[in-house]
Amino acid sequence: MSKVRTRFAPSPSGFLHIGGARTALFNYLFAHNQGGRFVVRIEDTDRQRSAQEFVDAIFDGLSWLGLDSDEEPVFQSARREVHQRAIDRLTRAGACYWCFCSPERLDEVRKQAQTQGRKTMYDRTCRDLGKTPSPDEQAVLRFRSPLDGETVVNDMVRGVVTFDNAELDDLILLRSDGTPTFHLVVVADDIDMGITHCFRGEDHLTNTPRQMLICRALGAEPPVYGHLPLIVGKDRARLSKRHGATSVSAYRDQGFLPGATLNYLARLGWSHGDDEIFTKEKLVELFDVAGINSSAAAFDLDKFTWVNFQHQKRMPAAQLAALVRPFLDHGAVVDDAILPEAVELLRERAHTLVELAEGLRPFTASKVVFEEKSVAKFLTDDARALVGELAGLLDGVDRWSEESIESAFRELIESKNLKLGTLAQPVRVALTGGTQSPGIFELCRVLGRGTTLARLRAVAR
RNA sequence: GGCCCCAUCGUCUAGCGGUUAGGACGUCGGCCUCUCACGCCGAAAACACGGGUUCGAUUCCCGUUGGGGUCACCA
Image 1: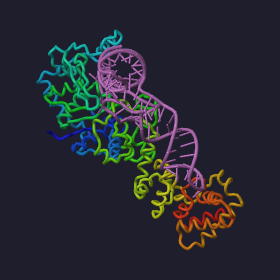
Image 2 (image 1 turned 180 degrees about the vertical axis):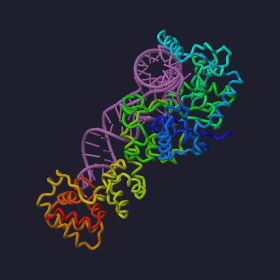
Image 3 (image 1 turned 60 degrees about the vertical axis):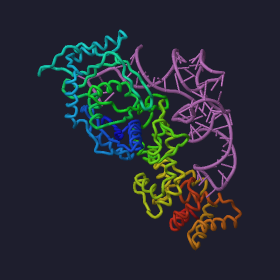
């Protein structure tokens, strides 16, 4: 049995879309689960719409996700010989014919069929002409699709899907400018690359019987397909900009982790019992075709955010600290000694790297930015006096530990018969500028004695 | 419109003939508590409809309805 080989074949006419990323992921997971290989192929035969910018963006996105091609990526535009050989073979087999109909006429025929409620297929005028174009003649090469019988797609996610051949059009293989179309190159390249399995979007399902027919005409057995349900928005319509960000890079910029993105995307249409959180390695290990759902799944930012939070919670603080760095404010003062500790305190309070960076401000900003409301409420004259007293006590503490800090707090409130909150909130405002932060003792500890005392004294009186 | 796909809480889903229909997100209560979170406990919340098949259907079959995809010299 030949080794499993899957491919992800985006066309570089846009950034890496969240749906494309999931398609890539499923191909990657399947291949790796089966001990096979995952290959990226750039479908840039439509040079009008292809752009280098998008090619870069796609590789960039895949690489961020950790879904790199196991082999040198393939560019369709550079494989004219492969495509030409396929054309030659189809020609020899009599599986295609030249069509001289003008685009205008085709349009006409289509419109008429449309209004009369008939099939909008090519009327096959040239099918039996048996003509070859002279050098100065415009013509396209069409596939000679069978007129009867049926083509059965044995889909990995949908099971058996049967199409009547009579419903299938005579597709254009070669444009009048001599360039090959999608249908020809996909089939030729899949054969040439030895692709055995392929997951793609459900929008390709109706292309599949046609491509299978072309494949068999080329004397090869088609890959096994799996058509993934589309990702839709909250309103059940196909995911688009209208629903918010759709590109992978947008989520990266919003502070989502690659591992969490993979996890969420995998769960969107695939499940393994009641499990929710998976590492990439676990996904590779557990991935199975039986777990794929066949109905469209709605993209839910809330759940994605929660999944991201779970990954942040599980990640070592040092690693998280490194990842959050690009999200820190410009001019942030980063003390390498305390960043991981600060991250440790904030990680349970932040769902994304962006939120984490925000929470880190008291540790990275050179000076405290005070919230007016918090100051007005908690930094009263009495409170400022109390804070001053605390500063004195903390100054005298032997070792700067959470225990000793807490003792100082307790000593002060007990001597005045106060509740901890009466002291903690003003201190919190003094230290962070606001009323929300990690526990007050750990906050002081990680901030360090110098910063803590300086900030307390700055508000004390 | 033709062809094709799909249908369990608002959302992601478990279920693979017999279950009080389970979990997760979100929502709403409560507990914990120095704030915010985290965590914990609890609540509301679903088998689209109609026919079969069967002793018994969420589960199998057919239809209806509803959603989606696709019908290019785009991919």
